[in-house]
Image (cartoon, rainbow, N blue to C red):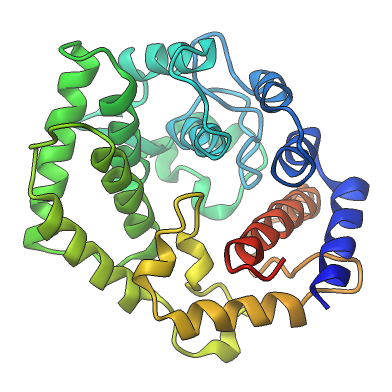
Length: 304
């Protein structure tokens, strides 16, 4: 059964995916080149070091933004990029510039999003962007790991992480997107020798508890509604399998096998809630992403 699911997934990728998603598929499943992924990714990077150009399919802003840059960093983490790659240096330049940063946080939305096709949640009300923990805490984790120690950006990251961790410990947030970036920050911090900015054990315990509570227990809604499933927290580190009930993780694996559509894809469970027809292009891009991540999820469960 899983052989058929994988074959149909591969067919969908080759027929529908963007070059970036195709390169990632090849890297993960066909001994493809990391350099191919980095080269294609470079076309989404702007001169200021940030990313744009619809790398995040739900907003097509060509300008650099923290969210688009965070999306690129997720890809770089997936392919285990080296610290000395120029793409990393340029991201550091963008984060260090102070652009799209205010009052201790990076922006979640930026004003120029309104000038391009976008989902309603990526638009700016009254033409003004908003700062948020998403993606601030994850970007701070990246900067803590990759910025030069003692640099202005490194110090900024330290301040953000100390404050964010303290606030989360004192008043844990259960919103799934915030939990996802908190998990990314936590995993960055765990890789740093001699880390002492906050109590990793206490933070991790609270974070894991909140993540487990965030997963929707009504499995009938999975793949039908936009709800939190175990795979929402899945990445190369496979931490989700240590956090969420194994029965739930296995249940989603079973559903990945059973819920595949005839064309090899999976449903996209959200809309843009506006009149932009570009949604239907973005929907196909998302399907390719979901296909790839679902196959990685099955692989991590030893189902492939």
